[in-house]
Amino acid sequence: MSQPPDPPIRFRTLYESCVVSVRDYICGACRGGPAAEEYSDTNNIVLMRSGAFCKHFGRKGVVADVNQSAFFSRGSTYRVSHPADCGDRGTVLVASPAVLCDIVRELDPAVDDRPERPFPFVTGPCSKAVFLQHRELVQRLEGQASQPLEPLWADVTALQLVADVLEAAFARQGLAATKRRVDTEAEHVDLTEAVKSLLASRLRERLTLDEIAQAVDTSAFHLARVFQRQTGVPIHRYLSGLRLRTALERLEAGARDLTALALEFNFSSHSHFTDAFRREFGCPPSDLRKNSAPPALQMSKNLKVRDFDRR
Image (tube, rainbow, N blue to C red):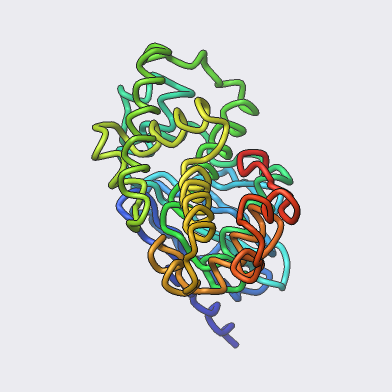
């Protein structure tokens, strides 16, 4: 009697931008295989959230599980088997070709000679920090967490995951090369200051990483990496600090409508603004609005100001 075919893999797009896409997948296959040959049409990275599968190519096979990252090269063929009955579930990260080469170039400058083959390995380690950051990304994208989605945060976080797993894979394989310094420190400072100026002038707009990168004539990943190195914080957190501190001044000046203030500074709702404000300053914005004493005096008495760049 023939066995019923394995249930198909279900994919669902969680996020997509010009620089990166994030897809959830669920495979309900039971123990067995290898199954029919499959084909990868992109260079992508899979991070597992549950279960495991074995990827077979030729006579070799490697296991992907929650402790591993798996790399699929564009044009590669493989077969998949499953060592357990629980199936598997994970996340597929696809950086745009240009951005992916930017990331790999920092670890292996020779990628410019083989841009169509950026992965010289098929698996790599997935640290606890990466695993938890991966889960937070998925939860935020699925709307399971309390904070609304911000595209700038999603771009930076997803690309940082790609960079982290690639760096770990290169290191484990002993392939980590001396990072090539393309720009000078002065150029990095100039780039960071240009971005600060842009953020200050457009802090009320809904910005994406790609839009900012285009405005300062650089690549998205290079921008994100240089900005964090120079300022100590990711670009989305820096922008959030600008918005919240500017909103605080507006409150002290007498602004009363919190919903209008939230929307003005590109927070999705009153509650989103309140939650962010509380994390930043230790109290909700309504506390300032209710105080009858002079704003500066009430600030010194009631607010425990938290430096946003230390979170």
